[in-house]
Length: 455
Image (spheres, rainbow, N blue to C red):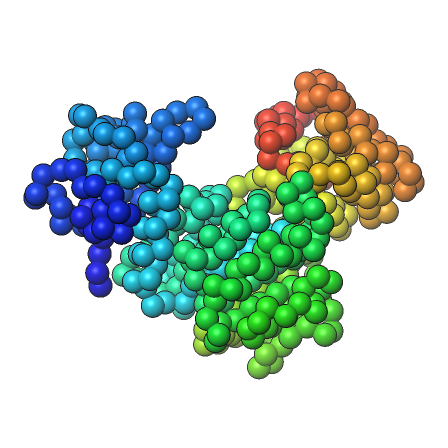
Protein backbone atom coordinates (compact mmCIF):
# COMPACT_ATOMS: atom_id res chain seq x y z
CA UNK A 1 0.00 0.00 0.00
CA UNK A 2 0.99 3.63 -0.36
CA UNK A 3 2.80 5.07 2.64
CA UNK A 4 3.45 8.58 3.93
CA UNK A 5 6.64 10.52 3.30
CA UNK A 6 7.65 14.03 4.37
CA UNK A 7 7.12 15.22 0.79
CA UNK A 8 3.65 13.63 0.66
CA UNK A 9 2.73 15.24 3.98
CA UNK A 10 3.76 18.62 2.58
CA UNK A 11 1.51 17.98 -0.41
CA UNK A 12 -1.46 16.90 1.75
CA UNK A 13 -1.17 19.86 4.12
CA UNK A 14 -0.13 22.55 1.67
CA UNK A 15 3.00 23.02 3.76
CA UNK A 16 6.63 23.67 2.89
CA UNK A 17 9.08 20.79 3.01
CA UNK A 18 12.33 21.73 4.71
CA UNK A 19 15.17 19.22 4.68
CA UNK A 20 17.67 17.50 2.44
CA UNK A 21 16.73 15.68 -0.76
CA UNK A 22 17.53 12.25 0.64
CA UNK A 23 14.92 12.57 3.40
CA UNK A 24 11.98 13.50 1.18
CA UNK A 25 10.95 9.92 0.48
CA UNK A 26 11.63 8.31 3.85
CA UNK A 27 8.70 6.34 5.25
CA UNK A 28 6.70 8.05 8.01
CA UNK A 29 4.67 5.71 10.20
CA UNK A 30 2.72 6.60 13.34
CA UNK A 31 2.58 9.98 15.04
CA UNK A 32 3.17 11.55 18.44
CA UNK A 33 2.61 14.92 20.06
CA UNK A 34 4.78 14.22 23.11
CA UNK A 35 8.47 13.62 22.58
CA UNK A 36 8.36 10.97 25.30
CA UNK A 37 6.01 8.95 23.09
CA UNK A 38 8.00 9.43 19.90
CA UNK A 39 9.26 6.24 18.25
CA UNK A 40 11.46 5.50 15.23
CA UNK A 41 9.70 6.49 12.01
CA UNK A 42 7.11 8.70 13.69
CA UNK A 43 5.73 12.04 12.61
CA UNK A 44 6.20 14.43 15.54
CA UNK A 45 3.50 17.10 15.77
CA UNK A 46 4.63 20.37 17.36
CA UNK A 47 1.61 21.63 19.28
CA UNK A 48 1.64 24.91 21.19
CA UNK A 49 -0.01 24.14 24.54
CA UNK A 50 -0.91 26.22 27.57
CA UNK A 51 2.09 24.89 29.51
CA UNK A 52 4.62 23.94 26.85
CA UNK A 53 5.41 24.46 23.19
CA UNK A 54 6.04 21.26 21.26
CA UNK A 55 8.47 23.05 18.97
CA UNK A 56 10.89 23.17 21.90
CA UNK A 57 10.95 19.38 22.02
CA UNK A 58 11.50 18.63 18.34
CA UNK A 59 15.17 17.87 19.01
CA UNK A 60 14.25 15.20 21.56
CA UNK A 61 11.72 13.71 19.14
CA UNK A 62 14.37 13.46 16.40
CA UNK A 63 16.77 11.91 18.92
CA UNK A 64 14.08 9.29 19.66
CA UNK A 65 13.94 8.42 15.97
CA UNK A 66 11.15 10.64 14.60
CA UNK A 67 11.31 10.70 10.80
CA UNK A 68 9.72 14.11 10.34
CA UNK A 69 8.10 16.98 12.24
CA UNK A 70 5.07 19.16 11.60
CA UNK A 71 5.84 22.71 12.73
CA UNK A 72 4.31 26.18 12.70
CA UNK A 73 7.66 27.93 12.89
CA UNK A 74 11.15 27.25 11.64
CA UNK A 75 13.28 24.75 13.55
CA UNK A 76 16.81 26.20 13.17
CA UNK A 77 18.64 23.24 14.67
CA UNK A 78 16.41 20.50 13.24
CA UNK A 79 18.13 17.12 13.12
CA UNK A 80 15.78 15.90 10.40
CA UNK A 81 13.20 17.06 7.87
CA UNK A 82 10.08 18.97 8.79
CA UNK A 83 7.00 20.42 7.14
CA UNK A 84 6.21 24.04 7.88
CA UNK A 85 2.45 24.72 8.06
CA UNK A 86 0.11 27.46 9.29
CA UNK A 87 -1.60 25.19 11.84
CA UNK A 88 -0.18 21.90 13.02
CA UNK A 89 -3.62 20.86 14.30
CA UNK A 90 -5.26 21.40 10.93
CA UNK A 91 -2.28 19.77 9.21
CA UNK A 92 -2.38 16.61 11.32
CA UNK A 93 -6.15 16.36 10.77
CA UNK A 94 -5.67 16.59 7.00
CA UNK A 95 -2.92 13.98 7.17
CA UNK A 96 -5.04 11.65 9.30
CA UNK A 97 -7.99 11.96 6.93
CA UNK A 98 -5.86 11.20 3.90
CA UNK A 99 -4.13 8.26 5.58
CA UNK A 100 -7.44 6.72 6.66
CA UNK A 101 -8.58 6.82 3.00
CA UNK A 102 -5.78 4.39 2.12
CA UNK A 103 -7.35 1.60 4.23
CA UNK A 104 -10.23 -0.59 3.10
CA UNK A 105 -10.96 -2.33 6.38
CA UNK A 106 -14.03 -2.11 8.67
CA UNK A 107 -13.81 1.09 10.70
CA UNK A 108 -16.08 1.28 13.74
CA UNK A 109 -16.81 4.60 15.41
CA UNK A 110 -17.89 4.70 19.06
CA UNK A 111 -19.69 7.72 20.46
CA UNK A 112 -22.34 8.66 23.02
CA UNK A 113 -22.56 10.38 26.40
CA UNK A 114 -21.72 7.45 28.63
CA UNK A 115 -19.73 4.23 28.32
CA UNK A 116 -17.78 5.12 25.16
CA UNK A 117 -14.44 3.80 26.39
CA UNK A 118 -15.93 0.62 27.87
CA UNK A 119 -17.82 -0.05 24.63
CA UNK A 120 -14.69 0.66 22.59
CA UNK A 121 -12.65 -1.77 24.69
CA UNK A 122 -15.42 -4.40 24.62
CA UNK A 123 -15.81 -4.10 20.85
CA UNK A 124 -12.07 -4.37 20.29
CA UNK A 125 -11.98 -7.43 22.55
CA UNK A 126 -14.86 -9.09 20.71
CA UNK A 127 -13.39 -8.45 17.26
CA UNK A 128 -9.93 -9.47 18.45
CA UNK A 129 -10.94 -13.14 18.36
CA UNK A 130 -10.93 -12.97 14.54
CA UNK A 131 -9.24 -9.76 13.43
CA UNK A 132 -6.09 -7.82 14.20
CA UNK A 133 -7.66 -4.67 15.65
CA UNK A 134 -6.36 -1.14 15.99
CA UNK A 135 -8.17 0.78 18.73
CA UNK A 136 -8.08 4.21 20.33
CA UNK A 137 -5.58 4.26 23.18
CA UNK A 138 -5.90 6.25 26.40
CA UNK A 139 -8.26 9.21 25.96
CA UNK A 140 -7.32 10.14 22.39
CA UNK A 141 -10.89 10.82 21.28
CA UNK A 142 -10.77 14.51 20.28
CA UNK A 143 -9.67 16.03 16.96
CA UNK A 144 -5.95 15.75 17.69
CA UNK A 145 -6.30 12.36 19.36
CA UNK A 146 -8.34 10.85 16.55
CA UNK A 147 -5.80 12.13 14.00
CA UNK A 148 -2.97 10.45 15.94
CA UNK A 149 -5.03 7.28 16.24
CA UNK A 150 -5.69 7.07 12.51
CA UNK A 151 -1.98 7.47 11.82
CA UNK A 152 -1.25 4.42 13.99
CA UNK A 153 -2.91 2.17 11.40
CA UNK A 154 -0.62 -0.14 9.46
CA UNK A 155 -1.01 -2.76 6.74
CA UNK A 156 -1.40 -5.59 9.26
CA UNK A 157 -4.61 -4.20 10.76
CA UNK A 158 -7.88 -5.84 9.74
CA UNK A 159 -10.31 -3.61 11.66
CA UNK A 160 -10.25 -0.33 13.57
CA UNK A 161 -12.29 0.78 16.59
CA UNK A 162 -12.16 4.53 17.13
CA UNK A 163 -13.69 6.47 20.01
CA UNK A 164 -15.09 9.90 19.18
CA UNK A 165 -15.82 12.44 21.94
CA UNK A 166 -17.19 15.93 21.43
CA UNK A 167 -17.83 19.02 23.54
CA UNK A 168 -19.21 21.49 20.98
CA UNK A 169 -21.44 21.57 17.93
CA UNK A 170 -19.59 20.83 14.69
CA UNK A 171 -16.84 18.83 16.38
CA UNK A 172 -18.42 15.46 15.57
CA UNK A 173 -18.65 16.46 11.92
CA UNK A 174 -14.94 17.25 11.89
CA UNK A 175 -14.14 13.91 13.55
CA UNK A 176 -16.43 11.92 11.28
CA UNK A 177 -14.94 13.58 8.21
CA UNK A 178 -11.65 11.97 9.19
CA UNK A 179 -12.92 8.63 10.51
CA UNK A 180 -15.66 7.89 7.94
CA UNK A 181 -16.97 4.95 10.00
CA UNK A 182 -18.59 1.95 8.33
CA UNK A 183 -20.37 1.14 11.59
CA UNK A 184 -21.15 3.65 14.32
CA UNK A 185 -22.22 2.79 17.87
CA UNK A 186 -24.25 5.33 19.85
CA UNK A 187 -24.07 4.28 23.50
CA UNK A 188 -26.66 6.72 24.84
CA UNK A 189 -27.72 10.35 24.99
CA UNK A 190 -27.08 11.63 28.49
CA UNK A 191 -26.39 14.64 30.64
CA UNK A 192 -22.94 15.68 29.49
CA UNK A 193 -21.62 19.02 28.20
CA UNK A 194 -25.00 20.63 28.78
CA UNK A 195 -23.18 23.93 29.21
CA UNK A 196 -22.57 23.73 25.45
CA UNK A 197 -25.45 21.60 24.15
CA UNK A 198 -28.26 22.98 26.32
CA UNK A 199 -30.40 19.86 26.70
CA UNK A 200 -30.68 16.23 25.62
CA UNK A 201 -32.01 17.23 22.20
CA UNK A 202 -28.87 19.31 21.73
CA UNK A 203 -26.68 16.39 22.79
CA UNK A 204 -28.38 14.17 20.23
CA UNK A 205 -28.00 16.79 17.52
CA UNK A 206 -24.27 17.13 18.25
CA UNK A 207 -23.58 13.39 18.38
CA UNK A 208 -25.68 12.54 15.31
CA UNK A 209 -23.57 14.74 13.04
CA UNK A 210 -21.61 11.54 12.44
CA UNK A 211 -24.31 10.00 10.25
CA UNK A 212 -23.88 12.62 7.52
CA UNK A 213 -20.37 11.23 6.92
CA UNK A 214 -21.34 7.57 6.57
CA UNK A 215 -22.03 5.68 3.35
CA UNK A 216 -25.59 4.64 2.44
CA UNK A 217 -24.78 0.99 3.24
CA UNK A 218 -23.26 1.85 6.62
CA UNK A 219 -24.83 0.69 9.89
CA UNK A 220 -25.86 2.53 13.07
CA UNK A 221 -25.89 0.41 16.23
CA UNK A 222 -27.69 2.30 18.99
CA UNK A 223 -28.81 1.76 22.58
CA UNK A 224 -32.52 1.12 22.09
CA UNK A 225 -33.20 1.48 25.82
CA UNK A 226 -32.37 5.18 25.44
CA UNK A 227 -35.58 7.11 24.82
CA UNK A 228 -33.82 9.66 22.62
CA UNK A 229 -32.35 6.95 20.38
CA UNK A 230 -35.16 4.42 20.28
CA UNK A 231 -37.21 6.40 17.76
CA UNK A 232 -34.33 8.25 16.11
CA UNK A 233 -33.81 7.75 12.38
CA UNK A 234 -30.11 8.02 11.46
CA UNK A 235 -30.84 7.78 7.74
CA UNK A 236 -29.00 4.46 7.44
CA UNK A 237 -29.72 0.91 8.60
CA UNK A 238 -30.25 0.87 12.35
CA UNK A 239 -29.74 -1.97 14.82
CA UNK A 240 -30.80 -1.56 18.46
CA UNK A 241 -29.41 -3.21 21.56
CA UNK A 242 -30.43 -3.15 25.22
CA UNK A 243 -32.27 -4.93 28.00
CA UNK A 244 -35.83 -4.34 26.81
CA UNK A 245 -37.73 -6.82 24.60
CA UNK A 246 -38.08 -4.48 21.60
CA UNK A 247 -34.33 -4.42 20.89
CA UNK A 248 -32.70 -6.37 18.06
CA UNK A 249 -30.00 -7.56 20.48
CA UNK A 250 -30.92 -8.17 24.11
CA UNK A 251 -29.07 -9.17 27.26
CA UNK A 252 -31.09 -11.57 29.38
CA UNK A 253 -30.59 -13.46 32.64
CA UNK A 254 -27.82 -11.10 33.77
CA UNK A 255 -25.99 -12.44 36.81
CA UNK A 256 -23.31 -10.50 38.69
CA UNK A 257 -20.83 -12.60 40.66
CA UNK A 258 -19.47 -10.02 43.09
CA UNK A 259 -16.60 -8.10 41.52
CA UNK A 260 -15.34 -11.12 39.61
CA UNK A 261 -17.60 -11.53 36.59
CA UNK A 262 -20.89 -10.91 34.80
CA UNK A 263 -22.71 -13.66 32.92
CA UNK A 264 -25.74 -13.30 30.64
CA UNK A 265 -27.44 -14.52 27.49
CA UNK A 266 -27.13 -12.57 24.26
CA UNK A 267 -30.34 -12.94 22.27
CA UNK A 268 -30.88 -11.59 18.79
CA UNK A 269 -29.72 -11.74 15.22
CA UNK A 270 -29.26 -15.38 14.28
CA UNK A 271 -29.95 -16.79 17.73
CA UNK A 272 -28.79 -16.71 21.35
CA UNK A 273 -25.64 -17.69 23.18
CA UNK A 274 -24.16 -17.42 26.67
CA UNK A 275 -21.43 -14.87 27.41
CA UNK A 276 -19.23 -14.12 30.39
CA UNK A 277 -17.18 -11.00 31.12
CA UNK A 278 -14.38 -11.43 33.70
CA UNK A 279 -14.83 -7.97 35.21
CA UNK A 280 -17.00 -5.92 37.56
CA UNK A 281 -20.34 -4.30 36.72
CA UNK A 282 -23.68 -5.34 35.28
CA UNK A 283 -23.40 -2.43 32.83
CA UNK A 284 -20.81 -4.46 30.92
CA UNK A 285 -23.64 -6.52 29.42
CA UNK A 286 -24.75 -3.48 27.40
CA UNK A 287 -21.27 -2.88 26.03
CA UNK A 288 -21.01 -6.58 25.18
CA UNK A 289 -24.22 -6.39 23.17
CA UNK A 290 -22.76 -3.65 21.00
CA UNK A 291 -19.62 -5.73 20.46
CA UNK A 292 -21.70 -8.80 19.62
CA UNK A 293 -23.84 -6.92 17.12
CA UNK A 294 -20.73 -5.58 15.37
CA UNK A 295 -19.14 -9.02 15.36
CA UNK A 296 -22.19 -10.49 13.70
CA UNK A 297 -22.12 -7.71 11.08
CA UNK A 298 -18.54 -8.66 10.28
CA UNK A 299 -19.29 -12.36 9.91
CA UNK A 300 -18.00 -13.64 13.22
CA UNK A 301 -19.37 -16.84 14.74
CA UNK A 302 -21.00 -16.86 18.16
CA UNK A 303 -18.09 -18.83 19.54
CA UNK A 304 -15.60 -16.27 18.23
CA UNK A 305 -17.63 -13.44 19.77
CA UNK A 306 -17.88 -15.30 23.08
CA UNK A 307 -14.12 -15.86 23.20
CA UNK A 308 -13.45 -12.26 22.31
CA UNK A 309 -15.76 -10.89 25.00
CA UNK A 310 -14.13 -13.16 27.58
CA UNK A 311 -10.79 -11.43 26.89
CA UNK A 312 -12.12 -7.99 27.94
CA UNK A 313 -10.10 -6.06 30.52
CA UNK A 314 -11.10 -2.68 32.06
CA UNK A 315 -8.86 0.32 31.46
CA UNK A 316 -7.45 2.80 33.97
CA UNK A 317 -9.88 4.75 36.12
CA UNK A 318 -12.97 2.96 34.81
CA UNK A 319 -14.48 0.49 37.26
CA UNK A 320 -11.13 -1.05 38.16
CA UNK A 321 -11.51 -3.19 41.25
CA UNK A 322 -8.83 -3.82 43.85
CA UNK A 323 -9.10 -5.89 46.99
CA UNK A 324 -6.78 -4.09 49.40
CA UNK A 325 -7.14 -6.71 52.11
CA UNK A 326 -9.22 -4.21 54.09
CA UNK A 327 -11.80 -2.97 51.58
CA UNK A 328 -12.95 -3.62 48.02
CA UNK A 329 -11.97 -0.45 46.16
CA UNK A 330 -13.74 0.47 42.91
CA UNK A 331 -11.71 3.06 41.05
CA UNK A 332 -14.13 4.75 38.64
CA UNK A 333 -12.75 8.24 39.04
CA UNK A 334 -11.76 8.96 35.44
CA UNK A 335 -14.93 10.94 34.72
CA UNK A 336 -18.59 11.29 35.66
CA UNK A 337 -22.00 12.49 34.54
CA UNK A 338 -25.41 11.66 36.05
CA UNK A 339 -25.96 8.67 33.76
CA UNK A 340 -22.59 7.07 34.44
CA UNK A 341 -22.82 7.73 38.20
CA UNK A 342 -26.25 6.11 38.41
CA UNK A 343 -24.95 3.09 36.49
CA UNK A 344 -21.98 2.86 38.88
CA UNK A 345 -24.27 3.11 41.91
CA UNK A 346 -26.47 0.34 40.52
CA UNK A 347 -23.46 -1.95 40.17
CA UNK A 348 -22.27 -1.03 43.68
CA UNK A 349 -25.70 -1.81 45.13
CA UNK A 350 -25.40 -5.43 44.01
CA UNK A 351 -22.28 -6.10 46.08
CA UNK A 352 -22.27 -7.65 49.53
CA UNK A 353 -21.07 -5.84 52.64
CA UNK A 354 -21.41 -2.15 53.46
CA UNK A 355 -21.67 -0.16 50.23
CA UNK A 356 -19.97 3.24 50.31
CA UNK A 357 -20.01 5.83 47.51
CA UNK A 358 -17.51 8.70 47.44
CA UNK A 359 -18.84 11.16 44.88
CA UNK A 360 -17.67 14.55 43.67
CA UNK A 361 -18.83 17.29 41.36
CA UNK A 362 -20.04 16.37 37.88
CA UNK A 363 -18.92 19.25 35.69
CA UNK A 364 -20.29 20.67 32.44
CA UNK A 365 -23.98 20.42 33.36
CA UNK A 366 -24.80 24.10 32.91
CA UNK A 367 -27.92 25.54 34.51
CA UNK A 368 -29.24 22.05 35.28
CA UNK A 369 -26.26 21.21 37.54
CA UNK A 370 -28.04 21.58 40.88
CA UNK A 371 -31.10 19.64 39.78
CA UNK A 372 -29.07 16.80 38.24
CA UNK A 373 -26.78 16.46 41.25
CA UNK A 374 -29.84 16.29 43.52
CA UNK A 375 -31.45 13.68 41.24
CA UNK A 376 -28.28 11.59 41.46
CA UNK A 377 -28.35 11.79 45.26
CA UNK A 378 -31.99 10.72 45.33
CA UNK A 379 -31.09 7.73 43.17
CA UNK A 380 -28.31 6.78 45.60
CA UNK A 381 -30.78 6.93 48.46
CA UNK A 382 -33.23 4.63 46.68
CA UNK A 383 -30.83 2.01 45.32
CA UNK A 384 -29.38 0.77 48.58
CA UNK A 385 -26.17 2.70 49.16
CA UNK A 386 -25.29 2.42 52.86
CA UNK A 387 -23.01 5.45 53.15
CA UNK A 388 -22.55 8.48 50.93
CA UNK A 389 -19.51 10.77 51.11
CA UNK A 390 -19.63 13.89 48.94
CA UNK A 391 -17.08 16.56 48.10
CA UNK A 392 -17.32 19.73 46.05
CA UNK A 393 -19.53 22.76 45.51
CA UNK A 394 -22.19 20.97 43.44
CA UNK A 395 -21.87 17.68 45.33
CA UNK A 396 -23.75 19.25 48.24
CA UNK A 397 -26.88 18.67 46.15
CA UNK A 398 -26.03 14.95 45.88
CA UNK A 399 -25.82 14.94 49.67
CA UNK A 400 -29.16 16.73 50.05
CA UNK A 401 -30.87 14.47 47.51
CA UNK A 402 -29.62 11.37 49.29
CA UNK A 403 -31.03 12.53 52.62
CA UNK A 404 -34.36 13.49 51.03
CA UNK A 405 -34.70 9.95 49.64
CA UNK A 406 -34.22 8.36 53.05
CA UNK A 407 -30.45 7.91 53.10
CA UNK A 408 -29.03 8.13 56.61
CA UNK A 409 -25.24 7.93 56.70
CA UNK A 410 -24.00 10.85 54.66
CA UNK A 411 -21.33 13.55 54.78
CA UNK A 412 -20.46 16.53 52.64
CA UNK A 413 -17.04 18.18 52.53
CA UNK A 414 -16.60 21.51 50.71
CA UNK A 415 -12.94 20.81 49.93
CA UNK A 416 -10.87 17.76 49.10
CA UNK A 417 -8.45 18.58 51.91
CA UNK A 418 -11.28 18.29 54.43
CA UNK A 419 -12.40 15.02 52.88
CA UNK A 420 -8.88 13.57 52.95
CA UNK A 421 -8.52 14.45 56.64
CA UNK A 422 -11.79 12.74 57.57
CA UNK A 423 -11.71 9.81 55.15
CA UNK A 424 -9.84 7.20 57.23
CA UNK A 425 -12.47 7.37 59.97
CA UNK A 426 -15.37 6.94 57.54
CA UNK A 427 -14.24 3.64 56.03
CA UNK A 428 -14.64 0.27 57.77
CA UNK A 429 -13.14 -3.13 57.16
CA UNK A 430 -15.13 -5.09 54.55
CA UNK A 431 -16.60 -2.01 52.84
CA UNK A 432 -17.14 -1.89 49.08
CA UNK A 433 -16.06 1.66 48.19
CA UNK A 434 -16.84 3.42 44.91
CA UNK A 435 -14.84 6.54 43.98
CA UNK A 436 -16.29 8.66 41.16
CA UNK A 437 -16.26 12.30 40.03
CA UNK A 438 -15.46 14.43 37.00
CA UNK A 439 -11.83 14.12 35.94
CA UNK A 440 -11.03 17.72 36.92
CA UNK A 441 -11.85 16.87 40.55
CA UNK A 442 -8.73 14.64 40.63
CA UNK A 443 -10.31 12.04 42.87
CA UNK A 444 -7.46 9.67 41.99
CA UNK A 445 -5.67 11.47 44.82
CA UNK A 446 -7.99 9.64 47.23
CA UNK A 447 -6.97 6.18 46.03
CA UNK A 448 -3.63 5.86 47.90
CA UNK A 449 -5.33 6.85 51.15
CA UNK A 450 -8.01 4.21 50.68
CA UNK A 451 -5.49 1.57 49.63
CA UNK A 452 -3.42 2.17 52.76
CA UNK A 453 -6.36 2.02 55.17
CA UNK A 454 -5.80 -0.82 57.58
CA UNK A 455 -7.87 0.11 60.64
